[in-house]
Length: 168
Ligand code: PCA
Image (cartoon, rainbow, N blue to C red; front, side):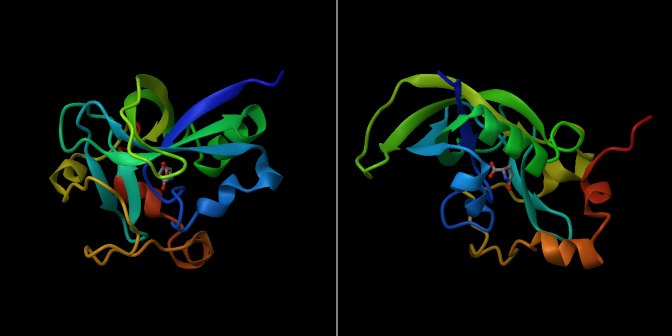
């Protein structure tokens, strides 16, 4: 039997967000498990000219983040790593989350689970001064609408340098 992995997504991969279609069948298997909240507080910010969401790898600061849990197969996990440019850009690590709503939309109090998440580790200091969110929505009241990859390739090729620390 193929191995399945659990992944917590908090940004553009969530349902209704700009990259949700990455979980489509051509990239592997992704089963929506439900909505979850992180057990610890984390800083979730939106940064760069491309308005990209980042969970900064600094536990204990910010909010208990609300996102979604997916069960993915090896192929989908591999695909997500490539899509998120992991490990050159985002890092895939584990995070403690608790299911709060199941896939049918019923409120639940799930077990606490350690599952995969993409974080930004080598971020510039100013990122911690940005507004911190609890639940990401590209079209939220912050007005920082995500710029698609297509736009980015043309005009914003260096958006990563805005947020990542230069290597010594
Ligand atoms: N995609 C991943 C990490 C940030 C992003 O936009 C996610 O949704 O969790």
